[in-house]
Amino acid sequence: MGYKVAVVGATGNVGREMLNILDERKFPADEVVVLASRRSVGVEVSYGDRTLKVKALEHYDFSDIDICLMSAGGSVSKEWSPKIGAAGAVVIDNSSAWRMDPDVPLIVPEVNADAAAGFTKKNIIANPNCSTAQLVVALKPLHDKATITRVVVATYQSVSGAGKDAMDELFSQTKAVYTNDELINNKFPKRIAFNVIPHIDVFMEDGYTKEEWKMMAETKKILDPKIKLTATCVRVPVFVSHCEAVNVEFANPITADEARNILRNAPGCLVIDKQEPGGYVTPYEAAGEDATYISRIREDATVENGLSFWCVSDNLRKGAALNAVQIAEVLINRKLITAKKKAA
Image 1 (spheres, helix red, strand yellow):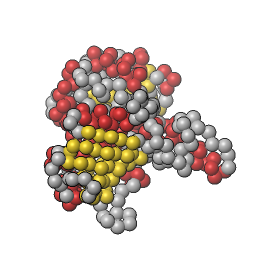
Image 2 (cartoon, one colour):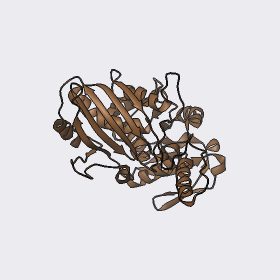
Image 3 (tube, helix red, strand yellow):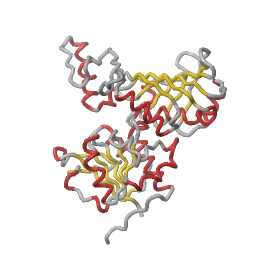
Image 4 (cartoon, one colour):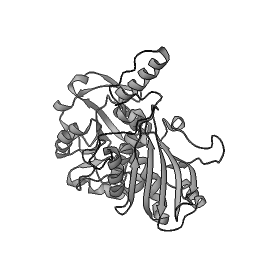
């Protein structure tokens, strides 16, 4: 018997990608229900070769739902995820609302799938921040080999991480530059066209932004609380895919060649590292792909046991929708959930 899946926030970038990935991966769903706010009721979204009509979240009865993929923002998740979980569905939430809750597992399947079993406390599993997800996929196999002590990361994050309005703003500003029209900033504090903005999410008291704090806190929860991490998160004028320049210090020796071989055999990783022009991955090539691409692996001679590398992934997929579907697959494959018996 297949599963009944609800996708909340189905009209957004990530919600639509969730539907694409459910279909691509032939997820064992007998039925998929698409939900959003009342203003989106009746909007049609694609699921494979089918067209589904959006229903209102606030009027939906979740008692027969097995898995709910939630991508409707933190405030909606805080209100609705406990209610949906109480109705017996497992909520896999893409927002930041539950990530640091000690009773909610924060999962990247290639890294800490075993922790998924802890979902029963609240029937909620959290998806990490998009920039954290790709980072820990690359760090995990290296940590297993040589024990990471410190990470310094600078991100180059695409505008799709800030939603459809942000993508529209990049498009309209870029067009305005060429047509000599006024550039209007609504989504970003400064123009994003032909510019970079070292500011994602709100500023905190210590001078870091919340996006940077998320990378620090989530990496510790997912991978190892002993790892020290500092981040600088930057928005760049790219539509899809996040990039990261990563510098890692280890407790034990590890060479660049060893790291390449380890990452080539690691789940979710794809190494493209030719030391020649074009022998690396950029956001353009990673868009629409599932892998976390790793390039420019090299030894850092300024510290003992140091490596640097370049990491790229589609933030709408591995950074959000794909990771959520993979978590659902873990629940099924490990027999942590069973489909509810449907009324005849």
